[in-house]
Image 1 (cartoon, helix red, strand yellow):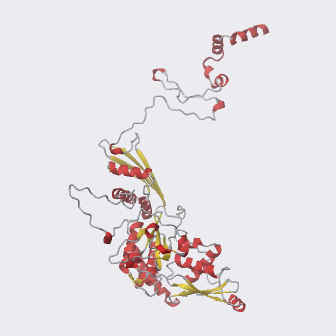
Image 2 (cartoon, helix red, strand yellow):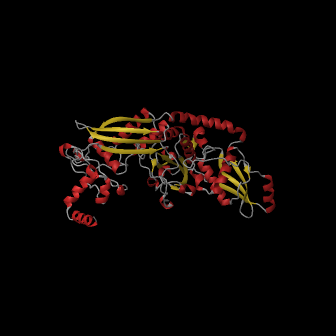
Image 3 (tube, rainbow, N blue to C red):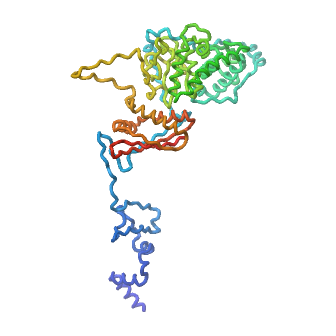
Length: 529
């Protein structure tokens, strides 16, 4: 038997046909199972060309993967899959596939998670000066301190007589609205909260809640003053008594209003503020609100050197007469109340000067109401970049640490009539002179109109998910597609809609397809929450 088995084995090894017959006898229809694949073909894998076609139009069987290869993904394209249909579009617009061209736009509400803005580049003072016709439009008074060194006996006595007053321990300040607070260290922030709380409560004299030097205290006081235009009774000067070690022992604030009169002053102030806010809230978006406040203040306020309480928002909003500081403080407060981050910016323009920085739809802009308050009123210094201001404004002190202003989406949107020149009408044979490039070459008037229309449709639909369709021409689609691919597409219309509806995020998917009659049909799928 042993001799016979050995002979059979040798015969099978040299006869493939005999091997096939033996396999049929032993396994029948199951001979192609995964078990034989593992034994006979351990390295067999489906190829990119896919399974072979079956006769009579039958579908290809599902691939079989041996257990030892289950961790290797199986991918291929079915055979005879038609290529995507490419429809040429006239006028150089990119080709469409069968699904059309897709654009995705996203936006989130203003918040402290905004991307870090570039640092401000300080122009040299020699190159900075006000225009001749505005050279007298200044009047900002920097923070001043009246310091007194105390002997040991005097310092010890004050430590026993003074209290901390209000410490402001529980106060919180949003970094997007109160940037100066976040320019301080922990000690500075503690003193900041204490100064704010005591000023708000009309406590004039108190002892610092932490050890702080004379120079550091001045920086902290400036931060408080710059962040809070609502403290219109707080003067720019204060006094400080310090020990021989240089540490402050006593802080005394100065107020322009007596404690007994404050409530009446506040009531008058708030009445004027609300008259403006009630009108501004009815406008379509933050840009329109900003422009309205700019224009309204220019109507109500007159520049007057030496005006009472001239460093405060009160002088502008109630008295109607102020200097640059009053314009800037009033504008800052109204913007804050409208939920638009706005900062008090101080510096130099041939003299000490104050203006504003506005954070609008993710971009920073300079605004100088004082210099726009001319006859007639203008937008010459409204929503400008640092480059625009480079020869006329230079920040100083803490304001140098505020974000750089390089916004372009809302720059130069308003006409400046006094600088406009008549456009000559060329003769029929004349060659027209080249036109000056627009300030924002990525957004034409037609594209801006399209954005505004989309924003209004989102506002009309409200929060949630919905779709709408809009037809445009080939030129506008080409511009929209180019802006998208260059990273210059505007998401401002989304942010406007969010602000109007009280949402926090918004996304829009735009699918463009060419209709049979050559129209460019945009289907907008919106989700706003």
